[in-house]
Amino acid sequence: MTTHVTGTREEWLAARRELLEAEKELTRRSDELTRRRQDLPWVRVDKSYRFETDHGSASLADLFRGRSQLIVYHFMFGPDFTAGCPSCSAIADGFDGFAVHLANHDVTLCAVSRAPLEKLQAYKRRMGWSFPWASSFGSDFNADFGVGHTADEQRSGVAEYNFRAVKWPPKPVGERDPLATIAAGAGTDVATFMRERPGMSAFALEGGAVYHTYSAYSRGLDGLWGMYQWLDRAPRGRNEHGLWWRRHDEYERG
Image 1 (spheres, rainbow, N blue to C red):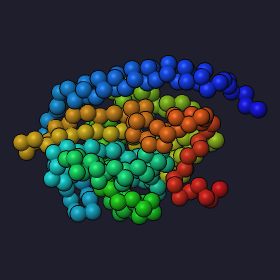
Image 2: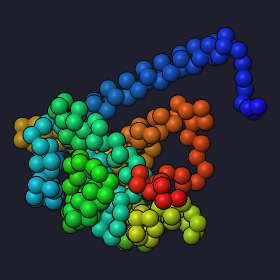
Image 3: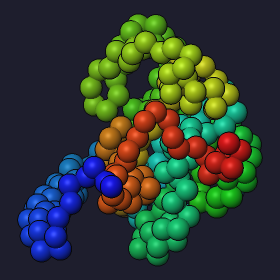
Image 4: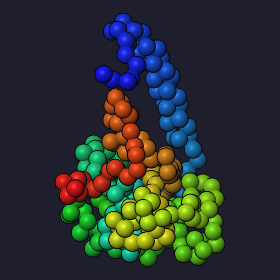
């Protein structure tokens, strides 16, 4: 027998209707937040950034691929990594499915990482992905948009992430800590792994100029993580106990 609360169909329906009102209110609040995102002032990007792509060297404007809007996913894959972050990989598993729809609505989706292009291409082949992925190796792009930190910043004990100062290290990390497991799975140590951070940034191209319009980090990316939207509606929710997810080609390895 289940230990969860049970009831009649009528009791379930009454509770569900009450929850529906809360869900509708959340939707209305989400719609309002969307409008507020769009009302943020645009910041012109005057700095010149260079990226390496499958089609050669590119500017930030080139990443738009002829469209007027660009969404960049800041994928954690540093120069010293041997594999991409498994969390970023789980998020990116959904990109190919909707990137074509975005592209046909004047929006280009592109991942950007600091690892050299050949590493990104090899990992992309391993994962079976086809979405655009550019290397920002050697540029200030990641640092300027809040997802790249230096060893000096780590040694100072303070760095900025998610629009606020954060302490380094965020917490003591032991060998059995999930963060240590994730770092090892990316072929690096915790300190090196944490020099990369996840995030997303949006840009607009207008009158030949590129503008930064929005960025989000940390839990602000939850809505982009497709599997969590489904788990939040499953009977036991996220039901997380430690590190349970892996890259999609690692589950059958045990």
